[in-house]
Image (cartoon, rainbow, N blue to C red; front, side, top):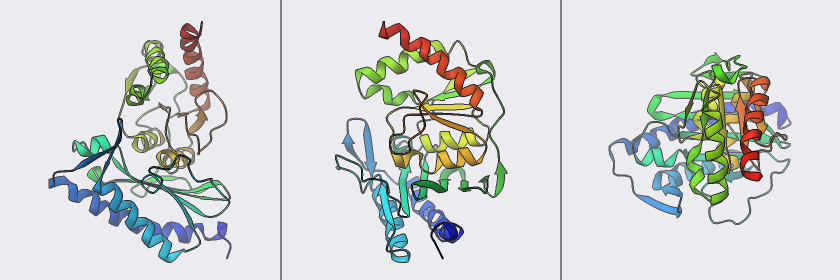
Length: 277
């Protein structure tokens, strides 16, 4: 049986592993979480390492030929490993690590899979909220087994927009871009949020809780699962500049509809012109 024909088998094998990893995630609830600084703006805990190591070990034992791209296993690498045609698992063991260290429930585990460079499986588990978002390519998106859909909002004035402003502290350029865009967007949308957890923000657009979400400077493990769930729920994803979305270079805008994305991009184009002049 070919890899594409066995997607359901891969999904059914990995889903209970992610649920089990959620138990390890919840062990932190009554513990003091020790934190290391990978960079000035990027934290890591022992749970990041334990969860990723456990997932990779169990998947590799079952499928020794499969490849992996993981947040912790790629730590310290100057370049990400290339995405190949081989079955590849893309793992974020704790997304929203800062929230996690503060015991904020907006954090979770993300596991995505690609075959022939195409996204085929997405699993996002938010243990503190007991929310399990799943998708298999062509089969729709689900929250705890119930089908979910993105909203049909097309107008910015009717939209709840989430912008990941925390990354603005990474460098002066990002700070200028994001802060300027916010000044324009806040006048045009219903309201703005920032959750500090990209995988959950993607799933919230997929389930209609948000209408749009944008973030720059992410990595494949931040988006591999959530963007598939979003697309399977009927949502739209595009690169922040308006180009085609690239899972390996994920500066992106996701929305409930293509029409809403186009209107957001026009607002941001006007914002960018003010500092490019």
